[in-house]
Image (cartoon, rainbow, N blue to C red; front, side, top):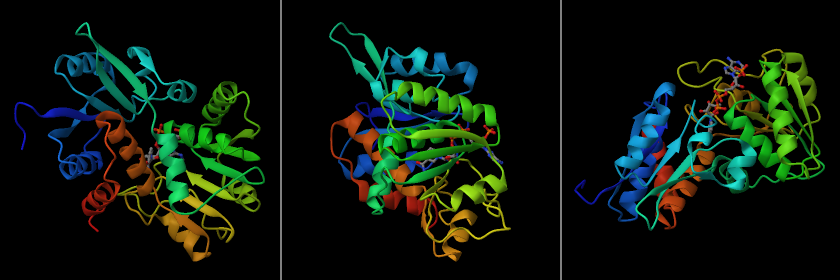
Length: 294
Ligand code: NAP
């Protein structure tokens, strides 16, 4: 029950109405017996700075950050973790009360670890003999590319509709991870490039919203060619879970991984970061599945 002692958390983004995070985090607080609450906080870009000041004034404990604020929020925070700094994106903020009564805004990124945890949970491991393709060059692609570089993959190809954006992403992350041995390439997204690279890659990640509800008949993979059966296909989209891309992968007996587990794992890390308690991951997964109608 919400009362005068309820601790507040939430999600800032624009838009936020389709997010599963309120259902997932509120179920987790309830399961952990915490008098905490998580609310969607629709925040237009021009109001981001005001919104952060408001959250501090209202005594919020933490918030998640989603599209389009993950990069824009960084200069507005007091400090960010080395991980979030190297990634250039924050998806979780912790409001820390200091001894002098002030509030320190600390930014972290749990997407990268969420992606790695999700891969490991489904029993998939990659190393220095593997190459991967990422379709997309936005915030999610940033976390995925950084994870794959930390796994020391041999090569990663970033294919994006806007090739310049892919180039910039590759430039920034190779500069930030200057000890990484992975060779990273940026290319314009085309059916031919995707199909050709997939013949020898181990992993294909869809880091675009293509295939998300209601556009469920769309896929980044073209109809003209089958998905190579050896490929692991990780679709970051989680609504629906069985996207057209994953259906194409499974039709070739390729391994398909949906985006729900990454969502749950990044949410679990944020929960632990704010509360200092272990996250009830099963409850969080069940709450998401319930919201997705399963
Ligand atoms: P973002 O920063 O807005 O980037 C979107 C990317 O998708 C851009 O590279 C964009 O290309 C590309 N794109 C958009 N529409 C496209 C289309 N019709 N055809 C080809 N490319 C297209 O978004 P994001 O934060 O990276 O999120 C991307 C997706 O990942 C979303 O669906 C999000 O829900 C999902 N996601 C899932 C998780 C999870 O935990 N499972 C976590 C984060 C994100 P241009 O640069 O050419 O515009």
